[in-house]
Length: 418
Image (cartoon, rainbow, N blue to C red):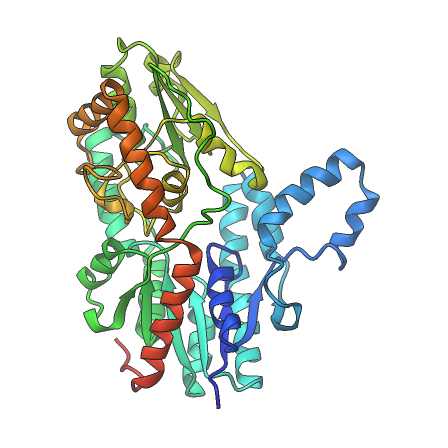
C-alpha cells in the first residue's frame, strides 16, 4: 500500500510545489493551507460584486495563493487569521501581524493534526514555525514528521543581529528584532519532534548542525524557479550604464547598509543606478547621499514580478541571513549575473554566474560591481551561464528531489528525536 502524505502550510512559500511532488506520485493525501484562491467558491466569487478596479486589484493579489495544478479533491483550507495577517502587513500593523501569525499558526496546527489523525496518514510534511502543534499530536499516533526549514536557524540570526547593531548602530533600520526566547524554544521543539529536516541550501543545513541538530537528520533539496515565466529580456539591451537591481525587503538583514556604503563610494561612476523592489525600512537620512541614483518600487503585483528582472542588468543581494533566496533563482533564470554572499544559499558559483563575496565586505562589493560595470562582455557571459544554470534547477527538479528524499526516508526506520 502506498504512503499517504499530508503537506501543510498556513501561507505559501514553496509548499504548493511540495504538494505537487507527492500529488504527481499519487502519494498526496491532503494539501492544507489557510488561503487558496478558487474563483468559483465563496468568498472569492463575491469579487464580482466589487467595483471593477478594486476587484481586479484584489484578484491580482489572490492569484499568488492559487495553483490550478493542485487537485481540488486534496485541498483543505482552515482558519481566517491568515487574512488578518495579510491585511496587517499591507497596512504596517506589525503588532497585529505578529499575533495573527502566532495564534493563526497554533489554530491551524491543531486543525491539521486532527485531519492527519482522523485519516490515518503516514506522514505530515510541514514548514518551520507552523508545525509544532501538528507534530506533537502526530508523534503520539506514530505518524512520521518532516520539517521544511526555509530559513537558517533563528539562533544564528539573533547572534548576527547583535553583531550588526554593534557595527552599524540602532538607528539604521530599526525594524528587525531578535527572536524572543519563547519563540526559540518552540523552534527547538519543532526541530526535535521532526524525524527529518529539509533545507533549501547547504548554508541553512550548516546553521542547523551548528545549533546541535544531528547531521544525518538534515537534508538539502535546492529550491527551483519557473524558467518559462522568468526569462531574459528580448532583445537584450546593449548599454554603457549599469542598472543594479535589489529585490526583497531592503533593510539590515539583507545587507542594505553595505550596499548603500558601496553606492556612496561609487557615486562618481556615470550611469550606475539601483532599483529596489520591495519594502524599505531604512530611514531617509541614510539614503540622502544616494537619493539621485536609487529608485524604490514598494510593491509589484505577483503576476508582474517576472518583468522587473527584465529592466535590470545585475542582481545585488549582499544578504546576511537567508535560507535559500528565491529572488536569486529568478534573476538567474532572467539572464542576470548575481552578486551575493554565501549566506544567500544560492546556486551561484563565484566567477561563473556572478560573484560570491563575504558578508559585510563593502570593498569586495565595490570591486565586483565595478568589474561588471567595466566589462559588458563579462556581464553578458555570466548572464548566459546564469540562465543555463537556472534551467537545471527548475521546480520540476525540486519535485524530483523531494520525491527521491521521501523514498529514502520511507525505506529507513523513523529517526530518534533530537
